[in-house]
Each structure stands twice: as C-alpha cells, then as structure tokens.
Image (cartoon, rainbow, N blue to C red; front, side, top):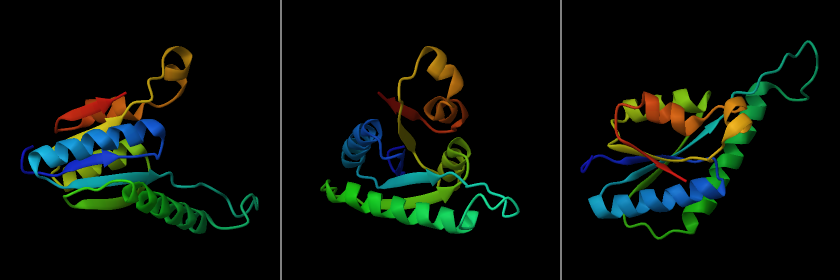
Length: 143
C-alpha cells in the first residue's frame, strides 16, 4: 500500500467528494498518486424501436465527455502535491472498479458509501459493499 497509488471511484456526489478528501490526505501521507475513476453505465437501446434519437455509442461518448468536465472541475478545487490520474470506464460500476484496481495494482481503494438502509438498501446495488467484498486490496469505505 505504501508505494502504490490509491484508487478513488467517484459518482460526483457529495459523499464521493468527502471520500476524495480522505484519498488525498492518504496520498499525501504515503507520498503516492491517486487514480480518480468514474464509471459510465453502458446505455442500451434498440434502433428498431427508435427510442433513442442518437445511438447508444454516441450517448456514452456524451456521458464520458460530461464526466471528464466534472472531473476537471472537481480537481480544480484541490491543491494536490501528487499525481492525480483521471480515468473514465464504461460498464458495471463494481466490475469496472475491481478490474481497474487489479489491472493497475493499486494499494488501496477509497470509496464513498451512500448509507442506504432498509428497502432502499435492498432495491439498489450497493457499489461500496460489492467493491469491499470483491477487492484484493484494502478498501476504505467513507460515509
């Protein structure tokens, strides 16, 4: 952990912003870089039904462009002394976060939890829980 970068997935929520603060503090303490990751859902559509005026690929590219602009805006709020690498991937959030962590041999994942309970927890996929259960490196879940 002490020599490998920290992976910090974000969905640009207030909780994810809070988790990024923790990741930046840890990066400063350990003198390592950060991988700031955003996962865009792969849009689905069927051109035969003409539901979308644009193709799913065009929609995904637009979502990636918007995410890139949000990442740059987010990073402009911080003065980080170490490298912050921004990454945008497509697909299932849990799968993409775990795949990125393994491919890049990160030392730790710092991820936000939205703290859902009860029926809301049951109905929505808990990304933080899925990442914590599937990761091969330490995971810090921030509330």
